[in-house]
Amino acid sequence: MLSEFDLIAHYFTRPPRHADRVPLGVGDDCALLAPAAGMQLAISSDMLVEGRHFFPEADPRLLGHKCLAVNLSDLAAMGARPLAFTLALALPEARSEWLAPFSEGMLALADAHGCELIGGDTTKGPLNICITVFGEVAPGAALRRDAAVAGDEIWVSGSLGDARLALAGYRHEIPLDDATLGEAATRMHAPVPRVALGLALGGIAHAAIDVSDGLAGDLGHILERSKVGAVLNVDALPAGSMLRKQPQELRRRFALAGGDDYELCFTAPRARHEQVLAAGAAAGVAVTCIGRVDAQPGLRLEDTSGAPVSLQLSSFDHFASP
Ligand code: ADP
Ligand code: MG
Image (tube, rainbow, N blue to C red; front, side):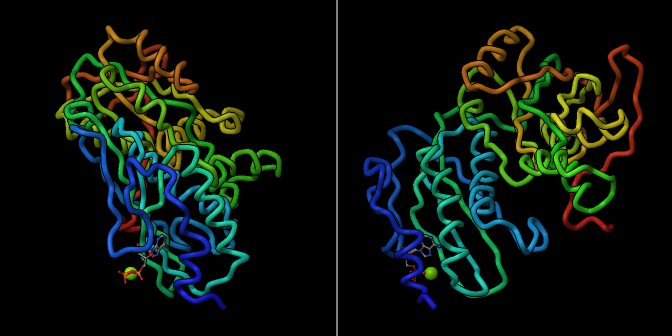
């Protein structure tokens, strides 16, 4: 069995890759971080708990990827550039068969974004993974939830609902063939944080949020904080490639209130429509205009013909009664 210090040295300590930004990494009482002159730090934490956010038998490599991906997604939603992260880890036992693929999955994604692991804490206990990410953003450039304005268009990146479809398959809520479940499950296990898009939207978008608990609920946070309302065209929602083949009611419900999508939902002035499309193209991700912000409070759903659509939706809430 590895000791706590062997484990940290072996799986979570590497020579600093960006000494300019990280003058001191893992191994001291604190790490030292040096954001570029004049930049603000963007900071966010996300915790993943076994049995709540992932299945006990989850593949450790994918889990390593996902726990960092969901944190990078928060930086993306702020338009911030990733700098570094810390990892607080409770583990039932120190097994290299688990630790090696977990750290490889996590550090591969870290390297893809130039985001350095600078420290953390390691303790014995039920599996629990808490990451804090640090990013940088120019003053005034952050994509805040309170910045949507009546008249803005509402956009979403990529596609929605396939992760929720996979969950429905695992839970036997609906029958799914193995190929469909396998494809949809990739969206659940290996989300792609839209970091490049978040950066490209700086100076173009007004407000942004990452879609983790379902589009309707997460957009609702923007509307509430910005004191505006919105109309969404449910037929314009980009359903995931597997969800697209499902019946209309399910398609709409999972696209609107699925969760675990890790796409960006953002608003931008209508006059910047072409710039938003160009930002998506530059970032290599589809962006779809799905509605508009207005002054009437609340979120209203319409179909393409403009007829109102009513759907029973529930956004994910850990403390809601079942
Ligand atoms: P302390 O006693 O000051 O809390 P620790 O013994 O917990 O320090 O950690 C020693 C060093 O290893 C610190 O620099 C800490 O940031 C780092 N560290 C601990 N756990 C992890 C981890 N899971 N990933 C990365 N760095 C870690
Ligand atoms: Mg410690």
